[in-house]
Amino acid sequence: MKKQEPIIRFENVSKQYDDDTVVLKNINFALERGKFYTLLGPSGCGKTTILRIIAGFEKPTSGNVYIDGKRMNDVPANERQVNTVFQNYALFPHLNVFENVAFGLRVKKIKESEIRERVSEALKLVHLQGYENREIHEMSGGQMQRVAIARAIVNDPEIILLDEPLSALDLKLRTEMQYELRELQQRLGKTFVFVTHDQEEALAMSDEIFVMSEGVIQQSGTPVDIYDEPINRFVADFIGESNIVEGIMIEDYKVMFNGKVFDCVDGGMKPNEKVDVVIRPEDLEITSVDKGKLVVKVDTQLFRGVHYELSTYDKDGNEWLVHSLKKAEVGEEIGLYFEPEAIHVMRLNESEEDFDKRLEAYADGDGDDEDAD
Ligand SMILES: Nc1ncnc2c1ncn2[C@@H]1O[C@H](COP(=O)(O)OP(=O)(O)OP(=O)(O)O)[C@@H](O)[C@H]1O
Image 1 (cartoon, rainbow, N blue to C red):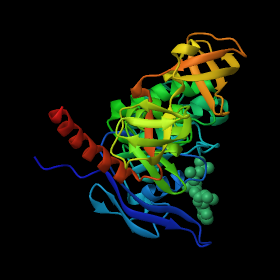
Image 2 (cartoon, protein in one colour):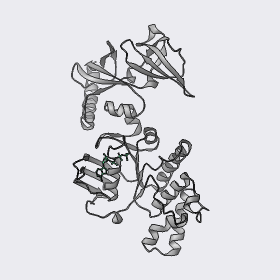
Image 3 (cartoon, protein in one colour):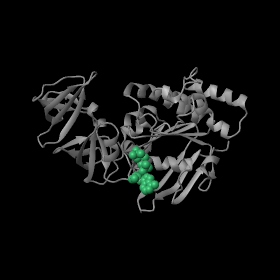
Image 4 (cartoon, helix red, strand yellow):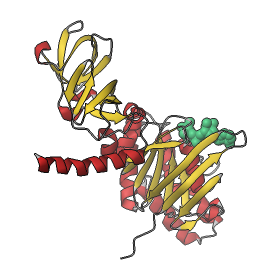
């Protein structure tokens, strides 16, 4: 069977504004049909610019954009199978809910009976049946967001772009909408590209996440891949909470930090290469001082409902965050235990491509070692 074209492909896409600000630097990706993708990164890293280039509101300065295998650089926004849901909803305040959703269909001169059918179906999908005649100002924030989503899906586009659509909602509603959006995407089977700076949202909703900073994709992968195998300090720090210290990779499976050598599961680096070492707070277990791999003093302790969150310091003044079901006492000296798998060793300034190559080469080499044993 012929392999399907990616629904969206960016090939060496860069974007620079007139004032010389380089906003995107050589972006490459291929998105598969029917998946939920998230662009995640701090404010100003270029997420919205990528959406605007997909939608056709902005042109790349160099590189190519393909939708469904066709080069789209010069195709205007209204000729693309793409609809956008904006952060501020961008609804028409003088039109009621029905007319807001129907607007695009009226522009396309679709016949009235079909408009009724399609609007009614779209409103049903976002759980707003019965709200057709409501004025926009009579709707809550969450309901307005649903109208905006209905307006995007009513056109039956292949691609739906969502630019921080949940950021104006309170936490409870936001979580509810996360479930709904994910469910909607799966039911429609369309490609969603979602922009957020909220890592929990990205982890919860996505098939694949692109972590960005300063116009560059730092890492892409499934939420689990990115959480478990961050390729650098930026990703480790941005996704979830992390303890990050400098270390030295003595040899394969042996890393030194905090003045001690620890067993780990990483390798493929040069002997004595400088590295960053990451340990997630939930992978640190509280134990007695003599059983601890690290000895720390508890500085603060917060109860977070399910777990305790401790801030602790070692003798060199490094902070170690601990998430634990066990409690300690503030001021107490405790031991911290962790398994070799809890240590994530990262090369300094390694690109995603080099990271993948190293893992691959290492995995092959690993097999040979086992034979030798
Ligand atoms: N028309 C423009 N002219 C010049 N610079 C621009 C223009 N539009 C965006 N920028 C700059 O491009 C950079 C990336 O903006 P973009 O909106 O893509 O970031 P973002 O990651 O979506 O951020 P946010 O989460 O704050 O929306 C920013 O530094 C922004 O100031």
